[in-house]
Length: 320
Image (cartoon, rainbow, N blue to C red; front, side, top):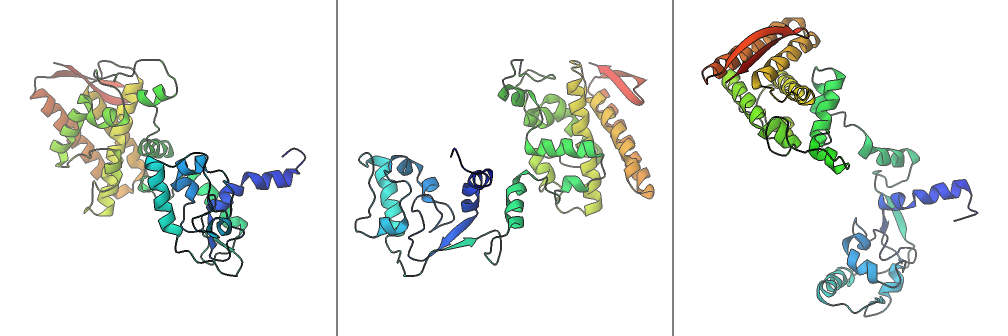
């Protein structure tokens, strides 16, 4: 309100967040709002029954005011019919047996086990949704920080594929660079014909069934494997995703599966420097197996290719 102090205005800005993080203990309900406060369940009635809340006359009525009479002391701006009537009957069934006492209402602070409010607990509750989860498996992989952030963005679904760009009012074509389907995260990294060929080559090379989507990659795909091996495989999968993304950003319309494979193995070998020294030869050997299998697989399907060195790593250009 105009004239309020800055301190009071700041408190009012977080009032709803404060109330959302707590609940009211049973008492006389004289200080508890029927619709706005979470007094019977963890979610207030205004969120459970938004259509009823929109047409109720006294939105800030207290629980004691509403429950003091039978039928309930609630007035609506229009008659209740259809779904609104069913919702009201459902709500009445919830509160009909509530018994008021002579004790005062007590506010319980749910972020703390002892129900006591602290500024620290509220701060943590407010910033928790914005914080990067430190226990996510992505952060435990031996990858450059830039790649970890990319994979985390991929997992969150916010990498700027063309469908995400279109949601930001981008006016360009949303067709995939490698085929004629719309580009989404799921399509580009898993369903595109380029991605499917790469997944098939990886399967032939290591007998590993590819993940179905990005969530499956980090949740359940490699279940049963020991942690060390699982982390190494996820490093390789991250390299393939990164190689697909770089190839897509190059806008190379003739990009081929073998180009992506060799680009991916280049990064895996480079990132092997982050591994323990005695584990690096295993990583390098895995890359050579993948490259050899890729060339044999594609050659057996009528592809011809030539080699060259570009940007410090091996490339294979081929055509059918």
